[in-house]
Image 1: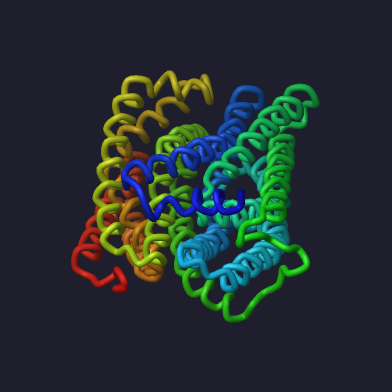
Image 2 (image 1 turned 90 degrees about the vertical axis):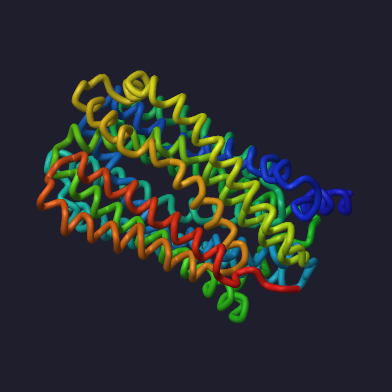
Length: 449
């Protein structure tokens, strides 16, 4: 039985490439869909049963949440690259060190985030220019959310371990369970117990706790070489150094890009609660639309890591082209779905005509440029899987942060409109994609056997 399980998990190194990418991506996609349901259900319940101001509070908190959690999620990305390479190479001892060091880092990071989030939430929201009428709900929701940071990091690190060894199904099952828990508790806390915005936060934290317990239980009970032994959870300095070397660039990239999004959010806040709610509502739609591309990116990272570990460099190059073809096909499909149905979809979040107006304006700018993200996600996943996380960071930060901030600070004073703010996204997506292409074609990023 153990041998069969291992053969199944290393299938990314053999077989038809596009089929392997799709087979591995599908559980990731469904899992990401359920993970996206956390905040989306929160927004639907808040927008329909509490009000547009509460919806604005939940929506405006997302960019800040991504900023603070981004660093730790980047470390999880670096850990996944290392684990996939060790698993592909069948290096049991180093894999053991990596898994237990990863879990120790997630416990430490989760505890730190709880303290940071509770203390700094009001100060950062005030710095973002959050309107006074939205501030109480924003602070309450954000503080409660950060109280679940430990569960959040433990689950994502544990799920990252499973995905790195080729198991994308069990993280999916656990997300489905936790998402259903979140939906039920949202309705109970808000509608039945009238707990308002705090009830939405409590539902999310409890659901995250469920997923964390399930993934840790799986890692403890497995008989494979990536088994987690609680008494062995500790930091191996050499392994931590390698994890951080790969993970910190990814974390910096995610955090700094999230910082640019916080600044964009601060500019949106200046247009009032309706603009905040409309932008936040389409943000949920955008989150769902981007999930397949993110899943393909994660598949490309694991695919590249395992095949480099197995010294199959030619297969890695073939995976790049087939992954891009899959991603571009998807963006055409999603455009045909969203354009004719935008208003109907946005009404799920709010019946307010002003909110719907701003949501549609956001979509008109962003949707035509999703194809640039399709190419970027595959190339970024491949570059990360090869261990070149520093390059990925420099490209991402240079375009999606520095260039975005130049646009916001230099051009916005001359074009002070909501639509002008939105254009910072497609412009920087395009420049990022172009730099990804140049690096992939010109640089020696693929190690030789």
